[in-house]
Length: 244
Length: 244
DNA sequence: AGAGCAGGCTGACTTCGATCAGTCATCAGC
DNA sequence: GCTGATGACTGATCGAAGTCAGCCTGCTCT
Image (cartoon, rainbow over all chains, first blue to last red; front, side, top):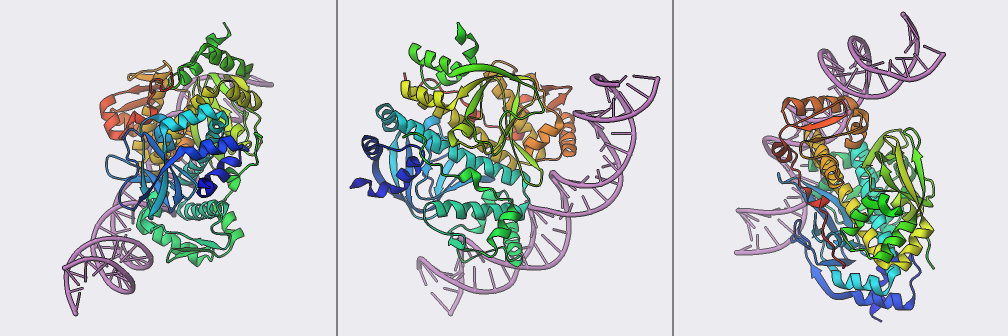
């Protein structure tokens, strides 16, 4: 039963395409080697030509871009079930880096295997296209978040989104969740300084909306927080199968 | 020769997958009806469930999101050859709106036709996945732009990117290009106020880097502008065919 | 000819968030 | 029991960009 550990990915792709037995085994054969990484060294490095993507099994990672002057912008955090570096292999060059946030376990997916899987099971390509669209929707929402919300709303929105994503994979709820991100990481993700992240978190705590302390996010007033952040989770929707 | 007008899209997808005759005709049959739109009314509206995507033939459009408090963030501008609303149909709900910037001509692509085209010509799915990845790379770069560059660098980067994209479809060069965007549109795209956009344009003009006046962008010192904006066009790369 | 409007442009003032410069607590290594 | 590193936290100051308010130009419509 090698696909036991595949649950996250199958759930994800299965939400769009009802996968048949043969398709599932093609999907399963994609994932060759399992590897572990620790924080501090990139899995994928900006500018390198990518031949291999990963599927995240456990732990958290983040994808980011570095500017020449050393500033960095975290584009997204990845949680179990997410692809890492899919865009890099498709575009044949990595425009970003990926780094573990915690210790992580991934399985490798080779570009050639992926392309031949698409030949063997065409609907897998559609499913992956769907997953990529969903990732894009998330990046778009981050863009709106950074472009049009102030620091406090931005943080609120971020914490809500993360909670919703974690809830989809079965960790966390509208009470709260555990979260291994430092204030420096939050700063790089939200386009703020670490100092200001600290102040914003205090502000949200004082408002009684959320508390983030000792690696735990606890929602104070979930409804009020959603209103405050203008959070609309449409873009995270998991739709039922469209192709049967 | 109905595919004469398809050139833009074929160039785009053909850069990743060398399309065969049958694949080309499937691609061609996708595009049913031609339609025209004028500025002021949305093609796609946020929250609506999308059954139809478009391919932009002529003119410019923009995709944006509106917050409940009325602020808006333009995610990207589309130029001829670009998809409009592809994500909306794949996710089955539109998380954003699309509006013409100028008078535009589009051809419709129905979701069901798209999915059945993927069945008939699986490599089309791969090609579309590639195109979607490229769009995502652009959104990611916008995110970095807004998150980590100041207003002036941001504008410089934006004007360079637009120039590079236009050059890829054969309009504009490193001298400059014509550009129908108002300062209000620029403001909504760059997360700035219209007032500040004006000041920033003046600043860039005074530095001798770019001039944007009367709908025309003229580069003063192209190399210096690239350095100033830390513009790295990797993410726009058109790679040669990977699948033959 | 005049009214109304969109878009470009500018000055004065305000504010949000960055920066600088620290303190404090915890933990790992020697 | 030190030393150094990391991360949370805070106050003071400064600057980039927003807001408000208004002017000017070139249109379209009546």
